[in-house]
Length: 140
Image 1 (cartoon, rainbow, N blue to C red):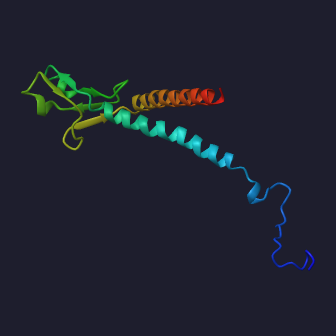
Image 2: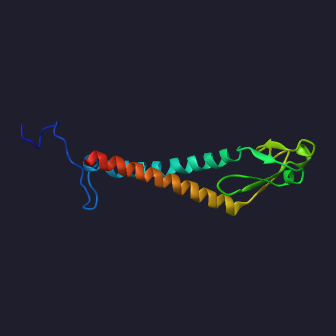
Image 3: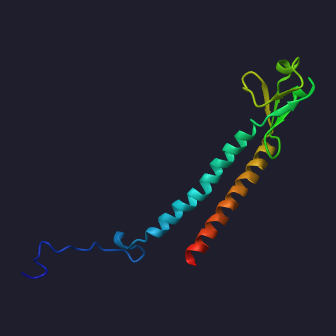
């Protein structure tokens, strides 16, 4: 039986010059793209979690007037909350972020985006440096 008549013989699909067969595609490109998204996305989520967590840092209220404008958020205050009616008779007192449904809350968007850029940029830089050190160690 000749090769042309052999039913078990596999045939190759015609391939355009600008593409490669599926068997020859490099998995590194999709792996690198997925890793890049992971490197960017994890610090992005961590930055939001840290900014939200910074709202729960306790603040000291020393006067009744100060309780009407309590700054919250790190590194720059990006949220102010009015807790005057709640703390008017309890000063000095330590407080943190309370429900925005019960307490008037003002968001300062430029400060929030500045904090987000600083925290996310810092986490991204730390992640890149850690990966760079790991790469250097593996090569050595």
